[in-house]
Length: 74
Image 1 (cartoon, one colour):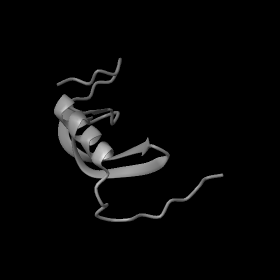
Image 2 (image 1 turned 120 degrees about the vertical axis):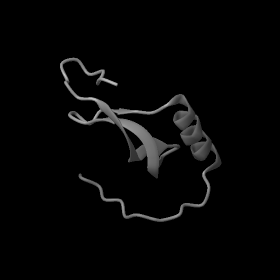
Image 3 (image 1 turned 60 degrees about the horizontal axis):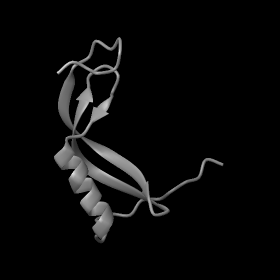
C-alpha cells in the first residue's frame, strides 16, 4: 500500500516496532508490536486489532518482562 503522507513516494511494509505511550502517569514501552511502516518516511500504521490489544495491555498492566532506565532531558 502506498504511504498516506502527502508527497511521500514510499510503500508500507510489515514490520514490528517499539511503541511508547504515557498511561496513567507512567511511561509504557511495548516491544514487538506488528505495524505497517513506510519504507521512506517511517510513518507507522496499526490495525484496529493491534490497537485493541495495546488497549487491553494498558488496562491490565501485566508484570513487565523487562525494566529500562528512564532519563529526563531537562
